[in-house]
Length: 312
Length: 312
Image 1 (cartoon, chains in turn yellow, blue):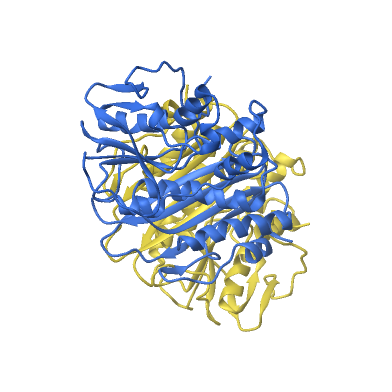
Image 2 (cartoon, each protein chain N blue to C red):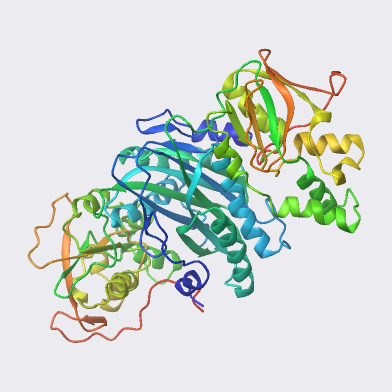
């Protein structure tokens, strides 16, 4: 199977509205919505770094697009399309069939067509760039949090990290519990509808990819504010809640790979109901820095930090 | 140096017109030109596959963006911005300084700002996605070639392949000659101004990345036509013209990595002068397939084919 056969067989799709030219020319040609802003994000996934070599190909296809859609969600954008650049050690048809199935199922669910990309031989590497739209001035940014705003998070935090610890052998979980957290790690749900519903309501937003402390820290830096977060308020699964407190806190505060939205909104704002649980976890304060407290308001010491690919 | 320091130091740039949000949020936010179509292309470069591990970092930065701008050029698009996703074995400051210098110098020359991306640890891999604009209906596609159109190519073909043969040890060149062809391989010039000037004139266009035969073949397939190409008419450098005829033909017809534009235009069309040589190399015919002939019109036998990353 050659490069062009591979593209035709697994990645070429019928044209859709708004896409004048899709896969198969030098560029894709898209019709922007008049007046809309154009939003772009790009994420690269490397084997052994972002995913285990043993992961199911369909789940990997899903996750590769999910982490990109999560960036659009964090900005409140409506997905319009994506490109896929793929380096593969070899053209393994079973793997490609699974990968493209998982990838394109999520793309279809969000009306976000694959419009182009590149395929080459090399160490397994998946780079997706995703495009979306938002009305002028309505994209959710990191820079709008104000003193007194409440801090909210969607869904649950920490399950993906708990699953990683099982793979690392530091935690043992019974079968059902492991499958729950493994699905959180391998099949995250991008909060695309929530992000769009938060336009005009949230003052700042970010998605939790590197860990709550670090990602919320981006909001604090960009907005020039501080925060107090109540660690025991972090939403967590029953599986995580059954673990020792120190592990619960580590997974919730610094786990990463959650792909939930953390956002700020004025106290009393009417938050949207899109079928995703929202939990208030803290408040924006004038004093710079991020203070973690327990349910009694006592400071919780922690040496946790977010994931950094090049930290010493 | 951490991941965010690395981005700030080497890749974060002042805001420019048309970019509301650049590097540093979950998404970049761009202001599209009212009425324009949005064009997107993505290319991934892998060490040992698309470039030698010994290549100068600044030249690599230049080339990584050049091959993407070449896709915009082939569609006649005006560049608007690009994202960079970079997997690095380690954060090598000398390499990053050189790479970003070469990359951003070419970006500045084309008014195409770096607006976002991703940085991670992994085997060296460079994925750039580039965005441009063109008026509705004016993007140059592969599908518009008509019987009787003339086939033109910009610049010169084959030097990059000749340089590769020197690196492979199959050809020896004296110092000056080697530097000329090495620059063609490592520092290609994307024909961005030519592409835009060909809007409304060229009937089809493609850039020569995998080799003339294969890339012209894409035009023929997409347009449902055939072609006759006169091999001795292919524009070549003095260095290549001094090589044996068989090598000249191989480099010109199937060399790849040229990043020149090959396009079709009606006989007698007034072609633009943007300071790039244009050479007529053949004609579009109704009979399917691609016929290569010499200056006397005699068929030239060749077993050449274009580069395919997954060909057996």
